[in-house]
Length: 127
Image (tube, rainbow, N blue to C red; front, top):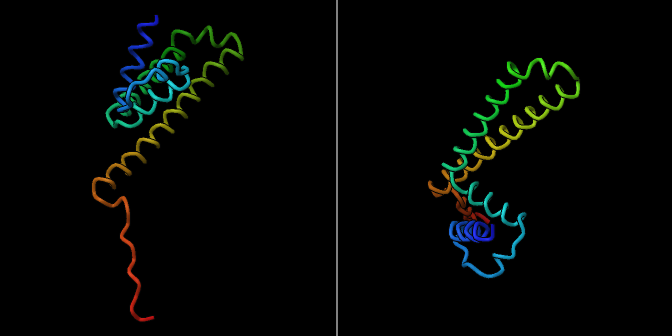
């Protein structure tokens, strides 16, 4: 298990361009999760792959609740509420992630077009 953690730290450190230090090995899972999220959120293709995977999971989850688990879910109100409530949370997460992706794409395209910093207005000579 220790080799796997070290490999994961190495790959995230290289992906982020961070010089590998011994402190990186001692980082918590929370810090590691943040580093992986930063790598995923920074790349448009990885964001889109995550969105597509989440969408496929949501469709599969919905199909599972509609047909195979229908009789089991209808046996109790809490089962139904928890199952479909979790689906609702996933859908909200997908919409928020899609909004983040759209805003990130707008920022990336503005940066490409050189609109990152608007030109400063010159002072008028009519003072």
